[in-house]
Length: 489
Ligand code: AMP
Ligand code: MG
Image 1 (spheres, helix red, strand yellow):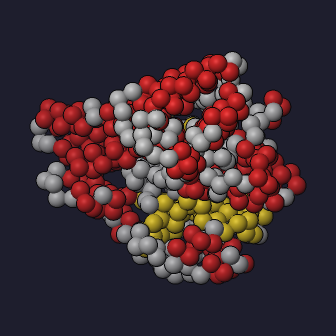
Image 2: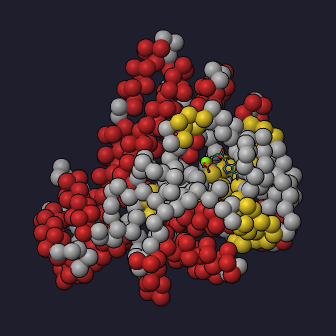
Image 3: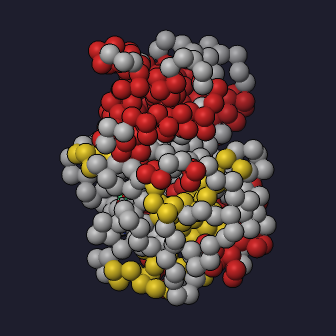
């Protein structure tokens, strides 16, 4: 079904535990991502079938699969845990897709592993549907992310705050190597393991950076760049990851681990949703700082590989880490410039964007709606009234719009082409938290997956106006607001 070509499972034994997925009673497909299955070289009809359900639930292990649970460590909310690892997931294997890209296929919720600690190794239906919808929305928004290949129900229940239907999620990722994977070997002072992992990660994700004479340093540079760009893209769409621990930070630069993630409705830089993030460590505007902090942990883990002398190694690492804020700022300004329809760079662009964001925060303006409406203002001044209506005081917008128009007038782009480019970066549709909650409730309470299908269809075409689905763009009513999200493990 999948043309496996495994490499991680050939790494030394201590990198993982060989483990078979657990069996489940009655696997049934909720959804198969057929285009993704085809990209992976599979027959989509075969995957999307009762036989496929056996494979996607872990009941049947395909020829060529070599299931392993990966070892990793990680800082969780700032505290170091020397051993985490795949406690409820197994990597079935890797495939090289039709596009030549190597990817992991992983089952999440497939039973206990040697890394399960006190957990049951299982996943509940709600988090599986959330990860499916949100990761596919992120992909459609053009943001590097792990993908959803499939979701199946198991016919079993899992015990959470209450009994919940069980499910298994099939995740596809550029790899599952995390900052925490490096920390695992560093914590054990396993220099050979570190070297092997660094060489593997560089060859797999950044082959162009190989052979500079200092591969570990080249890897650090590449990961710094990838994370800076990723977080800039998150901020561009109002995404709050919610649990940016080092074990949830991918070396490939993909968004990984959709636990308590959420999107902003009204713009508030201090917004956090996760029920366990009491201090707001992972709040919206804190994300670049946390990425920098996580990257510092990566540098620490790799330190012994940078140079023989510790002082020299530290100096090399610090010089790279110190570039993060500038790389992030440049990427973030690029994102904001595109949102404002600016094609050239000017000194004051960052300040122009910040000024708008501050005015939005003062009035609790909906982040997504504002930028989508602004696209219309690019061609038609009379559309300003609809944007201004989002503010407590319309003048707050009109004052800013005057500065924006003076700035756009200095570019020779036509208004139509400006508006078109803005519509390609300012989504009409994001998976709003109350909508995600709604599809989860329908699935859990009524076994009704039609709302899930509908929402998935809308948010995977985020940049198209879909008049028939206009209500999916609406912010929540006061009673629909989601105030807290949960890891739901
Ligand atoms: P997360 O917060 O989802 O990134 O998970 C953190 C760690 O907890 C990872 O090592 C997971 O494998 C483990 N974990 C989470 N949920 C479970 C579960 N239900 N059973 C076993 N391990 C789990
Ligand atoms: Mg995780």
